[in-house]
Structure formats: C-alpha cells, structure tokens
Length: 632
View 1 (tube, rainbow, N blue to C red):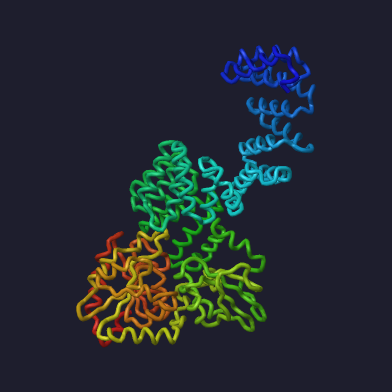
View 2: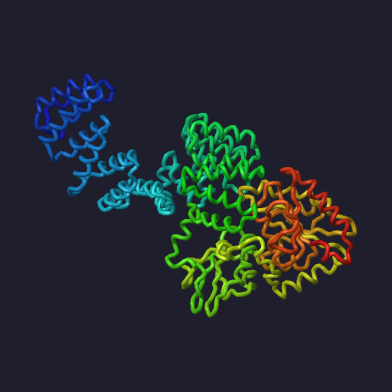
C-alpha cells in the first residue's frame, strides 16, 4: 500500500510507472532497482524490475531474479504470475503450465491463472485440458464469462458442436466485435446445420478482420449451403482467402469444388493439378480430380483416382462412396451396394448409427421380433427402396418404418409394414434396425433380380375421387404433369434442373394440357407458360400421388415425383442430364426399376433442347385413344 511509503518513495514509484508506460524501460528499470534495494522485503518492486528487464532484452537475468524472488516469497501470487509470464515470453510454455497448475491446486486459485492456462493449452491444441480446467474454474467462479467462452471453444474443437453452440451463443452480446469468438460460433453454427447463422457470423468476421484467410474460406464453405447458391460470391471468398494466404492448398481445393458446381471443369482441372503437384497425397484433392472424370462419364479413369485415394487412406469415405456410385452406374449392383455401405462412416451420418445400441439386422428370423427401418436421404430414395419391405419375411414379427412427415401417409399404404412413425428420438422399442438403402445389399440385388412389381404404393380413395372429378373437364386432352427443378441444395442439381420455358413447346393446342407439380416457385411462372399450377393443392405426398394417378403422363427431371409415378405404375418420362444419378445407369431407354418409365437422355451437358425434340416427336405420334398404353 502507498500509505506505507514516505513521500520520496511514492514519487520514485510514480516516476518508474510513468517511464514504464512510456516504454522507457531502461529508465524504469533503474528506478525499480533502486526501490528494490531500499525495500528488499517488498516483492512488487522486483516484479516490475524483472518486467522492465524483460523488455530491454535482459531475459535470462530477469528469469533468474524472478525465480530467486519466488523462492523468497513463495506465497506471493503476483510473483508467481510474473514468473510464468517470463517463461511464456521465453517460449518455455511447459514450465509456465507446471507453475500455474501447481498453484490452482491450492485453495482459492486466482482467476488470472486459469485464463492464462486456457491460452497456453490453446497453443498446444490440448482442448480436453481446456475443458477440464474450465469446469474446475467454474466451481470457484460460477458463470464467469471467460471460463464459459473457453469451455464453448473447447467443445467446438472437440466436435461437440451443439454443446459449443449453446454455450457460445449466450456469450454473444459481450463479443459482438470479437472476430475470433464469432468465428468459433460460426463453426459451431455450421456444424449444427444453422447455416444462415453461420454465414452471418463469418461475414461479421470478414468485416472486423478482412485480412484473415480462414474467415473468407469458411464463409465460402458456408455459402454453399444456401438454398439459392451464388457461385460467384463463393468463388470470390475462396480467391480472397488465397490472396491472403497463397500457401494454403485447402483454399485452392475449396475453390476447385465450387468451380465444379459452376461447370468450369477446365480451370478446375488446372487448379487441382497445381494442388496435387504441391501435395501429391492430398486425398480429398485426388478424389475431386477423379470426380472430373466421373462427371465426363470416363468411369474407368475416375476409378483409378478413387482407388489411389483409398491406397493412401483406407478410411477415405468419399472415395469409397464415389467408387460405389461408379460400380452401380456400371450395373455391378452386388459390389456397388456392398461398397455403398461405406456411407455410414461419413461424419454426417456416423452420428446416426452411433445412437443405436441394438443389433443391426442381417437377415435373422423376425419371429416375435421388431425390426425398425430407418429411411435416409431424399424422398425419391425412400420411394425407390421401400419396394424391398414386402420382400422381408417377417414371420410373426413386426416392421416399423420411420420417416419424415410429408411422406408418412404414402408409406402407410405399403404392404408388410405394421406401423409408420414420424422421425423421433428415442425410437420405439425394437430388436433390430436397418437403414432402408442397405436392403438392396442385404438382398444381394443384381439387375436381373431388381424387384419391379408395381404399383407398390396406393392412393387415398377420397383424394383419388377428388382429383378424378377435378380432371373431368380436361378429358379430351393428354393431361401431363410436369416438374422442372429438384432440390436446389443437391450438389448436382445444376445438371438436372432446367428452365421451365422448355415445357412451353409441349403445349400442343387441342391436344395437351400441362399441370405444374413444382413446389416452392413463383406462381407467375405457370401463368406465363399456360401451365395449370397445382402446388397450392399439395399438402403432403398423398396429394401428389393422387394427382399423378389421375394424369395421363408425368414428364419430370430427376426428382421424387418420378419415383412416385413409377411406383404407381403410371407413365413417366424422366429427363436426364449427361451427368446423372447412378440409378438410371447408362444407355438404357427403359428403367429396370420402373416398368412404366422412359428415359430421355442428354447427349451434351446442359443441352436440353434435343431431349425435348425427342419427347415432342413421341407426343405427336400418340393417338388419344391409346394414350396410356403408348406413353410408357
């Protein structure tokens, strides 16, 4: 306390502090040395002397003096803290950690030491330690914001994203201008599928610290999750990251993947070649390079790169699943579906299977047992593979199918299902479980054994009658249901979705009437092209199924509607891009999955007019009195 010093000492102390603040460390050191000699039992002057010596490069002397001082004053926390600071300044982090950890094991440890430990363990990337000491500190300093923040950051690094998000979002009001904090919150938000929030947080990061490359790169990655992607914005983000840090090959790889989505394959190939020249064993880049051949239909060359990636990293899930898609499109279904089981090791899906503590079904007897079947991926996948459930010999057992709400009423009509449940956790009691898309592998499906008995879904009687009456005024027309766009979030949607204007040429006066089944679009589009828009009539897929059942023909891009029509055994023409999903194979004009389906294929990527020319010829050849027979 200053009251213990005479006037001269107080003046010297004030002068020393002023010199220290002015960064006149030599002058400050001289005064503190004088004070330390005068008051050898007062450690505060030695403390400040050592700090000043540290700044003028006398680090070794400062260190020895501070260690000696701690021996003289072992219970003085300020001496211990400053000694730790000198250790850290001299890059002796482990010594600082040992010093601080010994101190926090005493009663009433100071908060400052915990905060320094958090920073030290951040440098060492030991996030379990941060979590451990954050929990320990919170016993002494309940609700301390710094401790809670570091605990949240530790959760993010440990990939416990939901826990991290819940902690960090509460600290947001105190960190609105803290770019690093916002970055961690953005990462947590992204991995909790809160993509809009993640984009907002990353954008704030780039405004606060525009010269931090990872902020731009992660913003670009998050922008990929927007419903309506702006590829130009994504590309600009990755280019900015590269300009800031041109040595980071991951930024080039991110840019390459967005350029693939923009169909700029030539420049993508150059970028990936550059990446692989710098890092030949960069597995994700090898997979992306193989994917370029995959897109161009050169499946054998693509295989080589996927296999090379697996040789480097046998656990490269994307390489295995991409290889599975090639095996499947080449009609090697036995090996393809077996390889496709790798999808369950993907980080996005592994959390699902980890929640099951019971047994995965491998074909065991179901007598007096309950089997839970988990639907996965899109609605089209669900309808395509629900066909396998009637093949299951359940004996005296029960089959439960879980699904999303929109498809619930349709699945209730499938034979051999005892109950359908909306996706829920915990799941109802069961003895076995199996993902729906694993059934083809379990049944050892080959092209010749694809179950293709249709229809295998049924139509609600009252809804069917409603739509039968609705379409009576259009009996003289060929009634065509159309869909021109799939899920915009699908990574290859740009290869399958088309401009609705193409359909206008199928409006043949006195012959055809087009009905739009497209959801989530501007109603003015249908008015512009003389389509009758039925979107407002569709509340769930039981409405879609009833509409399809009362139309003469469905013409659609690769969407769930195609599968509903095929499962109903209704005539359906599906337009396929040059790069298309594996399930339509290659060259075939008829689908082995659906007897009533015809496949109209692009010959050049993104060139759709030739496809419509073929369909128009077929429409004009149709005689009205045999519409149903000739359309499929």
